[in-house]
Image (tube, rainbow, N blue to C red; front, side, top):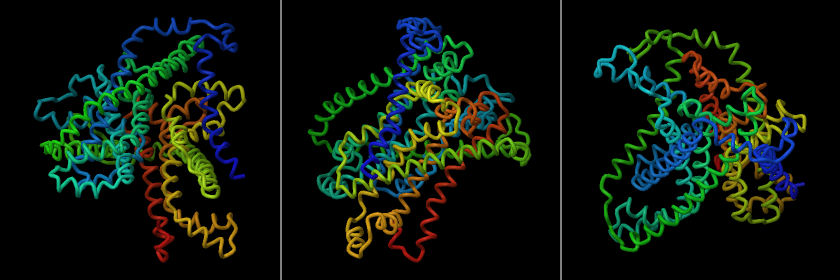
Length: 556
């Protein structure tokens, strides 16, 4: 049965992507008999490019996507280059788990509370600027997409920072650092010239994933991006959800265009990599020992700004959810109350239970598939190639808008549209890659002598898995569960389309309410959405310590 696990896993999350792409491409060229499209044509594309503001929408998509990715990557490189061997770096590392666990949409909502004309930053500036009413500022949905770029950056930079830290473990940088010191290299120059060229290949796929997400984000765009015109993804989603079914055809064309933009953007980034390394090669070969003055201070500023923005965003959610009244330009609410929580308790229950049920089911299924694949590797002594990593990243490299609409048509044909099974399946597509990436290295690093010893004592392979391997890997398993749970909680578009609007989760409710609801109610939903993954992370850390308090050797 384990031999079938890799094929079953690939089918579970690559099959829907392939089917979704097919059922998106066909309507994009006019073929959808259910809506009267009985022949292929370019009419959907002509209608797409004739839509008002479509050129500005495409330009906004490309500009904000590249800007967010470049800033996030440059910030991560700056922080690691300048601080990789300092105490500050250790403190930043400790903040990464809570920063990454918080969903994009909840941080975007909290960030909007900070930068809005009546937000906390404007309240701080009011005494100096003489404002007695909110200033006329085009925030957060400014026409240039600056707020959107910042909102993406403060979430994606910690992710790239974590990926960089993981890549550092694959090279002997400490020994190289000692050699570089004897040759007179400062830390930042050493890291940029000696370490980054070694680890960049491992960062390539995470960077491409960030680029694809930044080009196609929907939930964050609905909260922070301009809407006249909006970026391409929310525009396409609005067409798909419109009552006029004829808009489905240009929407499908727009989804295909989103895919083409993502592919071309990755190709352009790859070309930029080649050009950058050719330029940097001469700089590295010249052997300059330049101190790169100011990098430690700049790195501390960037790290502090990103961490501070995330923490302040969550603080705004807490403050607004407890505020009785908060008039401009008061810095703090006039009073604190639990009235909003009490009033929303009944309304919050169903989205909360649905979120937990879907996240737990999708994550447990992902863990079962990943464990089966990794155990098959261990027993058959199979070493996966680089192609496996590309397949794992495929759901993250293809824009959600490019295949989820086709998946919805596929679910309709299978009579699964609007079912809980469809929602869980759609979440599994995105949970499984993160669970695999979280669990693969600890599983493969487990000393094989434990299994050999168990076999020598008469244990079957199944008993070895249950009684030796899984207990020893309890901490990585729980960490993988926490990662998968957090990924599932943050899913907006998969829930919206696979569930056909019948299943409300914390994320769908928070994003919907953010468009014009009472800030106190929005804050309640967004805070619960952000707190739920953090509670699971805390449990993942506490449970192994509790279970293995007398068997510390098992706490891997």
